[in-house]
Image (tube, rainbow, N blue to C red; front, side, top):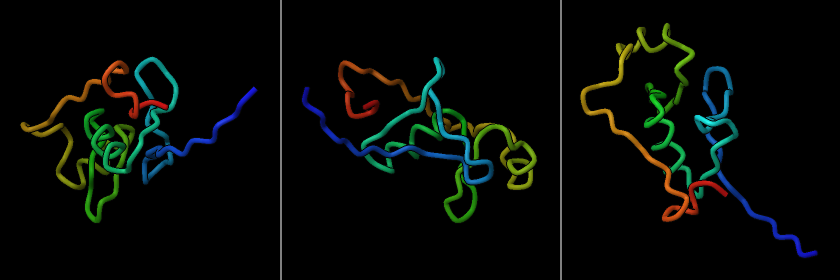
Length: 89
């Protein structure tokens, strides 16, 4: 049996340390920090001052920063395992 070690990036909320998960459950694994940040924002997490990323469980923080709803330019992000194998390891 052969084993291979692979490194990946997870993104966690800077407030509660919750790790970004797929809608079906399970942690999202990424190849780069930028991919992880983009996916978190696509899942309606918010980027606050100084690059802090917070999950949707903190509406008080979002209101404090004037971001209680996703902005008009919010994007969607779709994972396609057939064409984006680096998104989930």
